Length: 183
Image 1: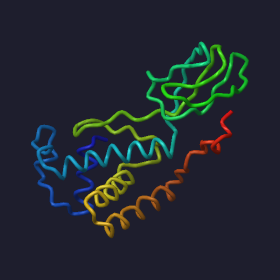
Image 2: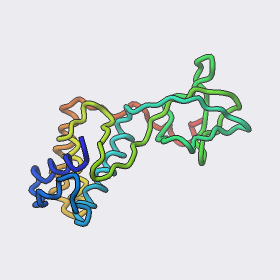
Image 3: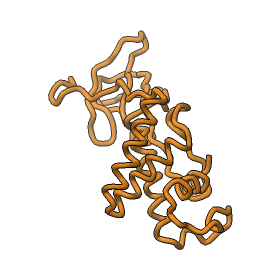
Image 4: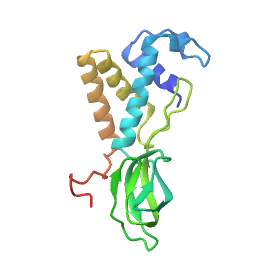
């Protein structure tokens, strides 16, 4: 679903009183500060969902030399697994721009970050269980929080979290190890 279609849902659910003409493909909607803020909230929520409900996993081959494997070219969120050619898990440590790991060739499975979306672009949900309506609840929670309406934000956030629970969308089992326990 496109961002403009999701925000049209938001407009209908929360009565944001945005003009109907905004929801055409070629419109002057981005001139409205509310729309700009809603698109920002949409991207913010999308990133949060990819971090918390990481189902968008990617694999690649990673080569480490001099104890460093460069991950700066990846849309990298976090490591799910790093295995050697024998399928054994490998110890690593996050560092700036990559991973600190013994020299070698590895298979990296990682949770990816979403691409930023614009007004007319498709939103790629991190899970098929997250429907446009659930996503709209989250967008509204972010939007009302950003404009300082804590009451509305809390209301929409509760709807969002309850809808995620009802849809049986579970938080990612991937967690960061305690500080100092990475190696």
